[in-house]
Image (cartoon, rainbow, N blue to C red):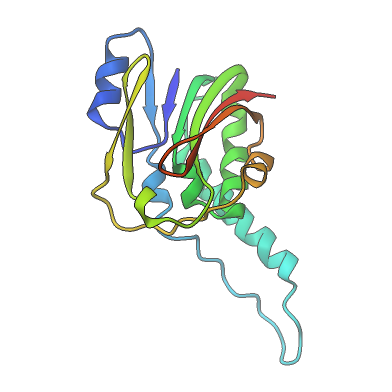
Length: 184
């Protein structure tokens, strides 16, 4: 069972199409085009808005969105999750919510792969990724609307990946940190 949260490039389909497996695409890029809208709390003049309540409401709105996107049959357990650079297009609340909703679909042997943007750099955004062969990935410029990126340190990203831990990381020439993930 393979989950690809990217754009579903033909190389990935061709690579896994020759194997006995199920390849799932979840439409995550579409889900990240705009943050959820939560209604403003009704307040009387002179009252303060509780920021923690607003943050919890936004977190729950992200969870609802991801429950819709990750609507897999009961009992689905992924062996491999290809996150590509999706971490970079989610703010902290969205990233936390995504992994909370994904958690029931991973098992103790699940592996993952992702690319973490450590600093602001427009040269590394709007790309498409895929699996060319067992030991080769493909990367090319994307043809999608510009999306907001959220660069941050590896430790901060790793702290939000419920169920996963970074097992290995390599800093690439383009400035992205390529990480392999294992379940905790």
